[in-house]
Image (cartoon, rainbow, N blue to C red; front, side, top):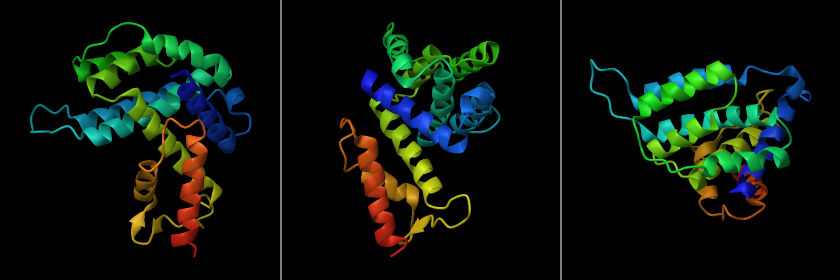
Length: 207
């Protein structure tokens, strides 16, 4: 777990630096992004008692991954990936967690985030249990989303030169397919995924 935590923290540091060289000094309101994402997450899970709603679990997990991006950024305000990963592992593995009321746990997580302006890692781990999001799945989904974000930036997303649809399919579909062909336990999993994505992009989108 520590190796994967450290890998994710390093990837988040890289994407934040790509956006802004001195992102730590800017001290962005990551906590605010988390509570906004939490509201979007609740919409996907459902909260309206006056209409029938079925949780969209795939979207719920995607929103949790988005929150994880901001949570990692808050953690990185406390030190380097190497320094932070060990403490995060301890908090993740501490105590037995049973599935609970997701809506109430989400509200508690959001309140803790707003009050402390820090990432409530213990609360986030509880939300993962509530929706059966394993750490391995979190890692796979996070790395995929991070690599896609970086890939888009590297290939002209800002100036409009990036082609999002490749041979009739969106880039995130290609990403999911390629990710399923790779070993997420490999130390260079993120590099392998980026390389595979780049190869397919050149073959299908810019050939």
